[in-house]
Image 1 (spheres, helix red, strand yellow):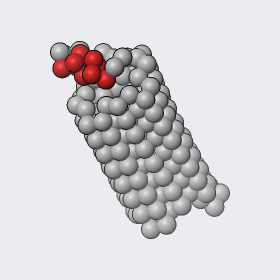
Image 2: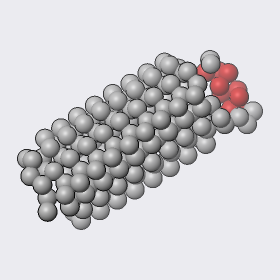
Image 3: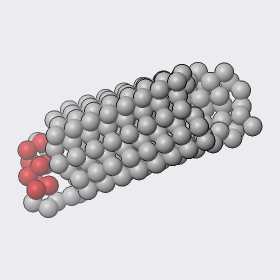
Length: 189
């Protein structure tokens, strides 16, 4: 589907775009709040600065997509593939990324307050300066993740894997770490 056609259908009131093939599509700065892109292929798509609050990207393939500065407030991304995606300064507050794959994704300066990242794979992800207050990272894989300067206050990292993660200058006040594997490989009691 051509981006213009998608935007016209959205403007006409259509919201169901599930299962579509939209590889490499340019939807930067688009307004698509509340749309359903579940199980869609958006590999390498440009969604920079798009307004995507409450959008359903569950089980969508967004590998290598550009979502820098996008507003994904309360969006559904459970089980989504976001490997190598750029989410710099994106607003993911209260979003559901449970079980999502974010291997080597760039979430620098992203807002992830109260975001659910339970069982998400954030191996080698860049989270420099990310704001994760109250985030649920239960059983998340953060092996080798770069969390320098991130704010993890009140986050739940129980049973998370932080082996090799960089936590330099990271705010870990009131973080739940029961059963978590710490950067040096020790298990937190």
